[in-house]
Length: 53
Image 1 (cartoon, rainbow, N blue to C red):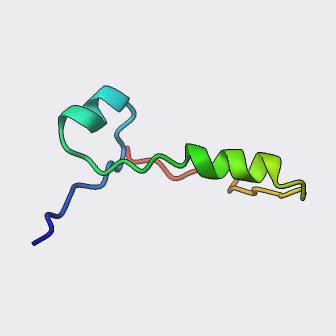
Image 2 (cartoon, helix red, strand yellow):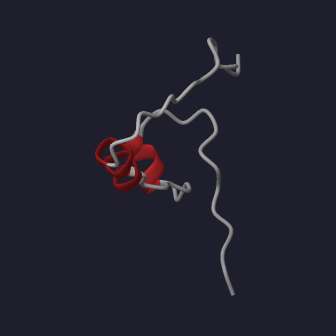
Image 3 (cartoon, rainbow, N blue to C red):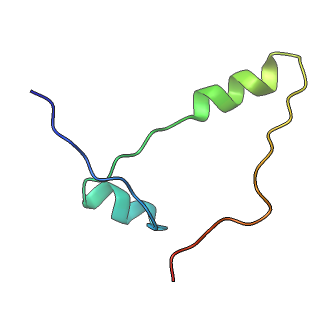
């Protein structure tokens, strides 16, 4: 049986992520692959992110 982990919406502190059981996905390997594959990539993002008040 799998356990459901909390999504870190609005959490900015990495220590808080780890100690309170939030879901964290390390994508470092994928960034390295993008860097070394040889083809240029455009990683676009919105100009502004919505933040909770």
